[in-house]
Figure 1 (tube, helix red, strand yellow):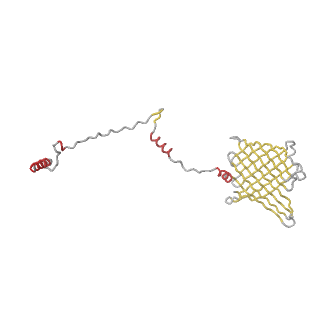
Figure 2: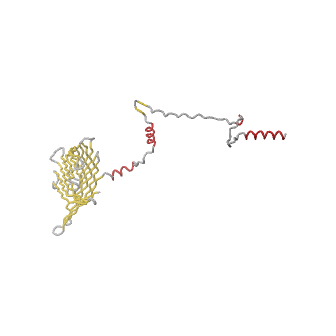
Figure 3: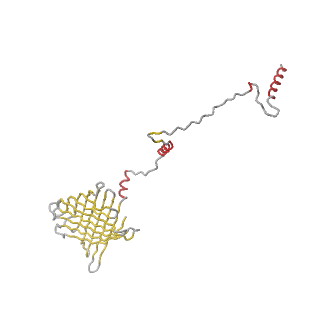
Length: 309
């Protein structure tokens, strides 16, 4: 048994030695049971890219389609969110041209006089409408006796009708005068207007409409139907000078000889652009054909300092 094992080891060692040649190179064993199987994998054939399809004679660009999808899938940029309760505040604080005015004159000696005039003008103009609010107050005294005390408030709304030069307007006016036969005068009017000129430097509009007025506390304390004819003009002469004019004619429908006429003329001169100070020279004429015991005509001259904000 040991001899048989010895003979077997000698045969295996002889076969392994035969695999090495005289040059030190190892040859592949000739015995089939020592040869490892050779597995050959096929070389993959390149897959051709699909041709770009043609639809209605136009070639579809895959790169462009993929790029557009990437852009579409990109998150949108962050946008400003305006909530419902912010709209009134934005409307009140943006787009307005406002100025406050103040004037003072007086004398002492043979005649002690003092006159004060203040006012506020607010205007919001857009491509569709114009809203203007004008308030004036005057008080004068002579020898410590009050000789003048009146106030006026006007609210004007004007809205363009489409792309035409026509507009629809509404007017609301209050007038108080301690030296007139009424306590308060109220007028409500509306109608149509036509812009002959409307640009950044110049505007000229004429108006026609109807309404009513009432003098509270007057001997005739009733509503009076009336018409309204008016014109409003502004012109920016240059960067420092502006001219403004306004005329409103209110005749009674029953008798056109019973009327009121209000005229305002003003010249604004810019004094200091950095501080927004201007000088205003103004003339106001208020005429009432039925003054009910008072003078029919009141003319006011003023030189005011304006602060725009």
